[in-house]
Length: 144
Image (cartoon, rainbow, N blue to C red):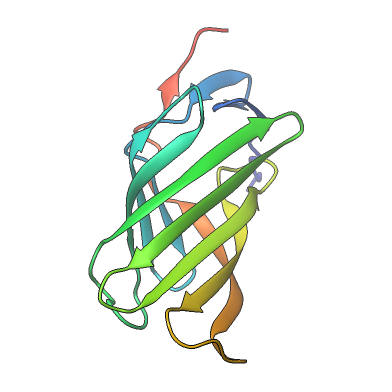
């Protein structure tokens, strides 16, 4: 069975997949390796600013959508993403910063979780996540 590889070239807020331009739009959904879901509900195609929800599968507020805000910035040869979540009722914030994988709309990101508590050696946790695009039906084909 032949393995089909998509060629993607990000430029601004659009990507090139197999010689067809697609626009990044609201309604796109990503899932990480733990099953947490990020939904982009609003996306500004000029600035790259996005907002929506993030629903974690682990820890405080698991299963409850939380407000998310961030940015996607694309330029040859790559695309960067950054977003943050304020965990309502959990006294903490998490921020992710990452890069899209070449050839896909998936991305890997490093995260930092800061607790709203007196400063202590364990007040900030760090880790990484891998996100896979779940929905592609919201991708809009663009003219060349």
